[in-house]
Image (cartoon, rainbow, N blue to C red; front, top):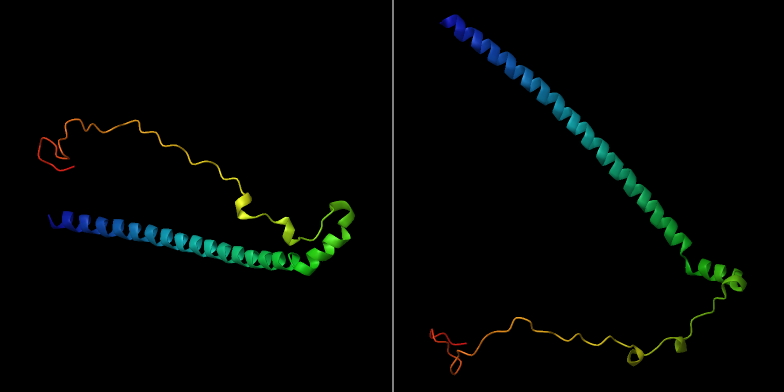
Length: 121
């Protein structure tokens, strides 16, 4: 009986060691994947920072004004004037939709706002 117990204990220890070995490598793989994803995120943030700086550089008002002056003949752009803007009363708003009530409430059984069950409506 003792030998069977020793054999089962030994097999259990070997099985648990194998399971721990596999879990250790699975954990290391997950950590490596996490490091790789964090690196990709960091690189994406750096690219985004560079793109924002480039956008700010290209969108400078003095540069845009110079481009508009250079391409005036092709684009026909003119400076904005206050009289080009409208007033709020000139905006045509759509009419408010009319609400249709399809499911009415039957109040024919109410007497002075009280239903037959005694509940005040």
